[in-house]
Image 1 (cartoon, rainbow, N blue to C red):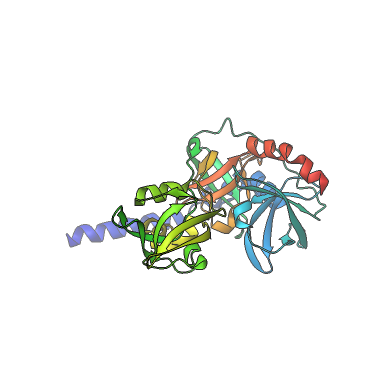
Image 2: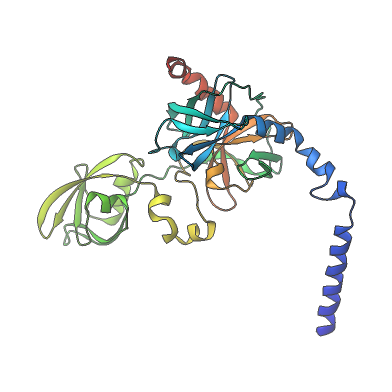
Length: 331
């Protein structure tokens, strides 16, 4: 057994020596490999911008025109002070304001004072195939990362907003659904909901079971307000709650999220996405996605987990720009 282990270690050592002695053009950081991504790297450098709230990076954005129009992820901008600060590729800080957004795709359209041309070339997502190389603009050096298309384009079902509670007993004897636990700093706690409260109505709709309560709340999106009717020590009362994002409210309480690390606040409810495996952080979302020729094929819209990343296809991006063109011109 020991003899076998020694041979294995010696073999591994020899392979490492061979890999280290490979000609530069054959290594992953070699000239030929780097050259394969040169067009995409140039396109990312010209069109990628960083959107900040003060000094805090909110997300990336994609400059799509010489008159300062930027596409970004709307849910990452919610609640931040405007005008946003935008770091462009001219090594200057610019200002930008939100002029429109599309709820179905979570895309935001910003108008900035940037005047340089991003030189963007519009591609197509229709011809993308599984395992095809893609390149995403990211915040970390050298500014791009590569990966592949990892699934066929598809719809990502919607997950509604959450109250931020753990549910207890339910049924007719209880008179509704009891609150077992209130998540710290969640929507329920902010609205004044307490452990032991019994919820019996959502927006006037009677709920007697946990399943009915969850179903009723899931019909509404994060950011929407719902009215809960409840009993506290047999005293009826109403509370208005602004629903939160599941990933933001429950965060590391969920096992899958613990394994995946930070994910996008909104990662569901998209009619059509490109799925890829280009490793990104949540603040890289909103940036551009290119093919190897440096043509834009999508806008990154969500980090779903550690291996699944979603982008809105370029065809939908262009459609939304056309639909919102009136709002852009008015500003």
